[in-house]
Structures are given as structure tokens and as C-alpha cells.
Length: 312
Image 1 (cartoon, rainbow, N blue to C red):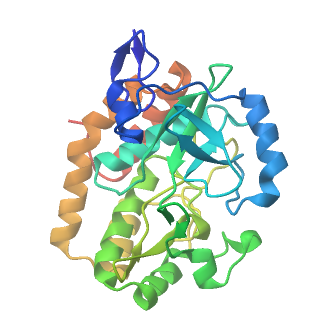
Image 2: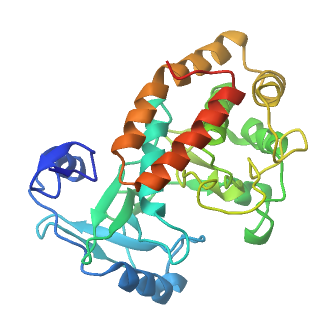
């Protein structure tokens, strides 16, 4: 029996569950294979890179969903989706990112519509709907913290979480609310081993006249992919990028730097605690290989212990 790569629900002999298709469009009845293999998608991504406004280590392509034809189509203009195929060197990044975004959603972190789609060679490609677009051509005002801090691609790691908070105070309409959201996101990224949250992976968005943190994106467990002497956070926290503790994350960052009340901190930790069993369930039915699932769970268990939580 197949499992839908958009919803993870069993879907019999079909490639996608009808609920997954309806998430993309209420009238979508089927979704065709992408017209490219993973290798062809990577080549297309390199060929079109200069035409795209999104960059990074992962190959990316802009796409539109042709509902009438029931397929994603690569498009240099007016794309409403981003496609990320399999990477040349780093294994299972699409499956990893899709799973990690689902884990974030389970604890109330806002994420865009996303999922996995089959390519021509049956490899899986990650898709995510762009939150900086509306209608056919209109753009929504979004700026990443690299832009806000005047830092470029080469300096996006040369910053601290303490300095990032100052930009929330300066630009966000309700800084206290956004700091609480950021606190949860920082705890989440520590737990799932996402050590690549540099300045350009945090953004603010203008919605209904309010400036707030954008939906989260580029969330994945980098620790099980990268090799070597790993860091635990991309931007320094209390001068550190590794060997983080509950005291640093909760007391120093949450209470002292974000000025979050004990009640909100307790609620945040409790929300994560309650979700942990469902996280394990999601990892077990994810599209990661058995080896990567095991690595993901082992790292998660270690980080859970550091935060003083338990899998009930």
C-alpha cells in the first residue's frame, strides 16, 4: 500500500491521497509526475539560477501548478511554488525538509503548504508554496533579517541571536508576541538539529498592516546530513554555537533576552512535550530511509534530554 507524500496517509495503489490533492486545489483530481528526473531538475536549477530571486545551497526551481493539466510546471515568472529536487551530495534533503516542517506544524509553528511530489524517475522532490505572493502577480512585502541587518550572503552567519532580537523590537508591530514565537522556533531548531538558521532564514512579513515574523521555511535536520565537528546553532547565543544547555536556551534566551514570562515558557515547553510522541510517529512513517530515520530519532532523543523533556 502506498503512502501519500503530501499527507502521509495511506492511499492504496494511487500515488497521492485525494486529501493531499485537495490541499493543492479543491478541484485537483490527479497529479502527474514531474517532467524531469532528479538529475534533470538539478541541471534546470543551475541553468535558471540567474533568473531566480531565491538562492541557497539546495537547487531550487520556481513552478506553477497547472490545475487543468494536473501538473507542476517550471516557470521563470509568476511562480507560486518552489521545487527542491534531490541534492548531488547531501542525501534525502527533500524527505528531511518535508518531515521537519511537519514536526514544526505539530507544535503550532506556522509553515506554508508543502509536501513531496514524484519526479519522472520516481525520486521525490520537495515543494513549498510561496507566502510572499498573492493573486496572479502581486507580491507581499517580506524582508529577511540579512536585509534588515545589512548583512550579505557572505556574512549571514556573522551575527548573534541577541542582535536579531533588536530588529524584532525595531520593526515588528508587537515585539513581545514575535519574541515568544521566535523562542519556540529556536527550541524547535535545537531539538531537530537544524544548525543552519542563519540571518536569511528568518524574515518579517507585512500582513493586514502588521509587521510580524513570516511563516517558517528551510527547516531541516542538518545535523544528520553534515559531517564533522558540528555546531548546534547558526547565530551565536551567549557567545556560543555549540554545547548549548537548557539554561542557555530557556533561562538566558527565553527569560532574560526575550523577556518571556514563566507562564509562557512553561506553556511552550508543555506544547513541545505533548507533541513528542506524535513526532516519533511522523518520523517512523516519513519518506526517509530507515538509516536516516534512526539518525533523526537518536539526535532528537539526545536533545530532548538536554532540554529536560521526555517522550511519554
